Length: 475
Image 1 (spheres, rainbow, N blue to C red):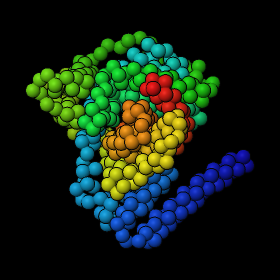
Image 2: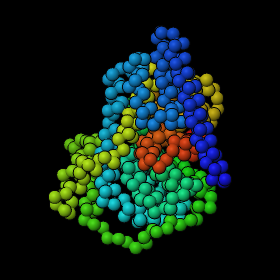
Image 3: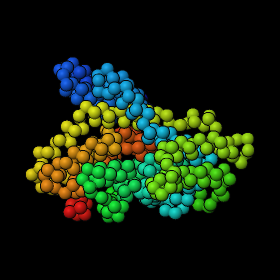
Image 4: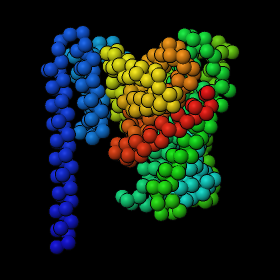
């Protein structure tokens, strides 16, 4: 009898979720169609069409109406017929250079997994920080954050994800446990927050510095950035850890069972893969000085693809077998490449059709408002705006507009523009918000709702922290 009741209850829950998803789908499609048919065919039509497509995609992503990778293909269906993108803009989004950085990084990550390098490193981290769940999360959060200060956020997340998955493979399956979700989110959030610390930590940082130097002759040194970015980065990382630790509850003191305490010897294949990976990391890390002081010119994505290609040439200890074979790529998360392309296409739609500019004009009503309120509005727009668009796109459009506004209104340019750029690294809610979010989501062990619940709270906390730091350190 009890089994029958549980079966009926489970069936009811499934039906309820299906009905809710059906209702959301119907409402979203109705609103989408209404905007298309009601909007007059004039010069402003594409503005509303872009909003309609964006609303459709974001809603479908949030509620997973269809697989998120399918939603990421919507621009192929709607962009050109509605005139919100031309064919060059559309294909450029899905062929963006960061997609090749993803691809190369994913292939390198496959090699780490194939030869179990990630397990060696993961066990080393556990031996260092201890085996309680809260300390493991702290270890991963800080390790990812510190690495991300100096190398690409994307590369850091790619490197740390296999290690986190190796740790999770040692945890007994428990649907009620929050540890797997928080550990994976620690990798995603650590990579993004760590990138805030230095001028080279995240591409938007360099973009903002270059924009202000070109347009307003304001030079930002490495030390200038670190004085604000470094303490802010560590404060947010600590708050993220405290948030995870609080909601772990009694789990925080539980230890991971079956973790080897003794060191296992490294195999020759592991050393070969790790050596190549470290060489790629060094090329990523020192790309700017190498290009400045030598005739060598290269890009992050070029290095990633080069490293991926070498894996198919370099022999393993068994000479007839290479470190990677093409059959290994069957485990490559190809869908995430489509997801990133869809996010880039969405950002381009919003940019070229004036939606971003319109959003950024909201703060013009606050020209006479106190600085704290103005910063709060700007940072709020930046953090939640970058959830649905590239942080590069947001900074490239938002920063020049805000800088111009600052000049006209008598505000300090740096005090308004730097918080926006820092906030652009605080997208914690959606897989498309940042590359690290997307990478961690590709593990298949997270739901969008998991990321959205934790991310919404941390987004709000980040608004307060960024504003306070801006008032204290940029005055």
